[in-house]
Amino acid sequence: MSRNGPLALVFHALVMVFMLAPILIVCVVAFTPEGYLSLPTNGPSLRWFKAIAGYPEFISAFGDSLWLAALSSLIAVGVSVPAALVVARHRFPGRDALCALILSPLMIPHVVLGVAFLRFFTQIGVSGTKVSLVLAHVVIVLPFAFRLTLSTTTGLDRSLEQAAISLGASGATLFRRVTLPLILPGVVSGLVLAFINSFDEVTMTVFIAAPGATTLPVRLFLYIQDNIDPLVTSISAALIALTVVVMALIEKLFGLERLLAGEGGGRS
Image (cartoon, rainbow, N blue to C red):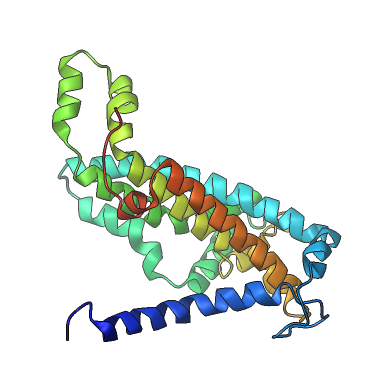
């Protein structure tokens, strides 16, 4: 059978349907006029989208998720860039151990991380604070930012940097005008992936969420424990629409395929 034959195309189509069907169902149910989850619906209605305004705790949680994801992803990228440059350019004792340490959160279940962070933050007296929440999210999103940044720094053409140095560029100018533009696709893709993972994180955050900063995923998780109305689907549909808009903007500004591939390249 040909790799791209009819059976392969059918298989790929079924996989796509399997992956997208839950998202489609959530979006359809979000427009139900009923007071309960129902499919099919009795005509489209914006009832549950309007109902979001009556739950300020969800709006507040959305804001908390935004600042937490933005701050943790920015810190993760700030750590990942120098770490990736050092790992990609130098051979030193403990290099592999450093990479393993940074990537280790990918191999640890988030339930285990949540319990460990709760114990650790309690011991040092910062449990239940926004500081502990940010630190925990930085740890879990750091591997994504580091791995994608490392993929661009590994294949970086050093001759361009050497040319800039020969022309008298300082270290700061070299990084800002040459190195950073060359690794920008990896940096941006790492930032986006770290932001998404931080925003979507619920398992670990349940253990350490601050009383005054409950994220949206945690708020939704707590809500569905006692309610079965379509409010959650309307919030989810709104987030899906927002994600599509953001991804479209990223595609327009940077080229989504290039970012996901982590390809390096400078700008003229």
